[in-house]
Image (cartoon, rainbow, N blue to C red; front, side, top):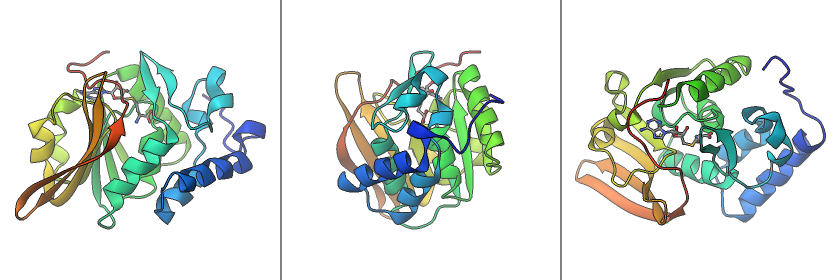
Length: 221
Ligand code: SAH
């Protein structure tokens, strides 16, 4: 971890990141804050060295324990959906994973509360964000199916793992006017879903097909 190269050379350089951002624009990502943040955030430091050379491809990549770092397009898309109604103060993230999505969020909202069920993944992510001096993130090793009630309510909730149904606890912990972005389905078919909590009740919208690892219960030490 001490050998992290934050600036990067060759495949990890700013020019490579600019190409990635151009691809995101071509794919329809338009929130300038999201694009700028993705442009300045190194993705290679969230991967093991064996995958560094693939860090700026638009691909999901293995991070160990059968989990994956999400594809840049979907990170951008989910972040854009979360931010679409204006700036956010408190965001709950379920599935810290590598910490890449966490790092993007940390630069765009006031506070991030990130829950992960696999402790070694979260420990690594925490160390990466500490090196990046991102101090507005709090972490919890727990089953995110219960959310993090004590820190809520949240004006944004994002899950980077797909449950069969949206956990009621997550909806409960959403503030009025809050937005929940979550993939829903099984390993053969999933949709990215946006749920908004309005005065009139819940508004649910299917955005597009998604391909996420499953949302699992319990924790791993
Ligand atoms: N956002 C991550 C994606 C990691 S993959 C990244 O950018 O790297 C999804 C993550 O969700 C995995 O790390 C997995 O362990 C975690 N996860 C799955 N079910 C969970 C649950 N119930 N509670 C918390 N984390 C969960």
